[in-house]
Image (cartoon, rainbow, N blue to C red; front, side):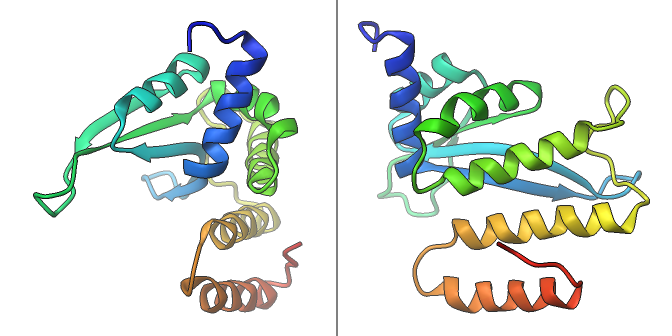
Length: 171
């Protein structure tokens, strides 16, 4: 790790995120209405890998996390959100292949949230139904892209049906 230059560090992080990471949109409902938050997350039993993610891009590490099975090793989770996420996504985007679309969606959401937002209000629910529908469509699309295995076709069909009912199109 110490012998890598900056470009190599970002290339390593892009590869790690392709294999182990997740690009997510989280929707929370505080008193002010729904808030959408963009974040990147990686979970591993090997904390040293997550420490490298943190060293390269910032963020924080949670854990050890309970695994439910005493025979499993404890897991740790690295997360990055907020202001630093935009710059990190911009650096990762040219190097991503499989998860490029997820990163693009997070960047689109972040750009939209910051347009006309006052300090501390970038993720707040807007009264504009079109904007709310667009943000929900982004969340639905990223959820579909993040699914793996047998669950994906059924969830993708349901998500596309819901989105079509709203008159939106997922690309």
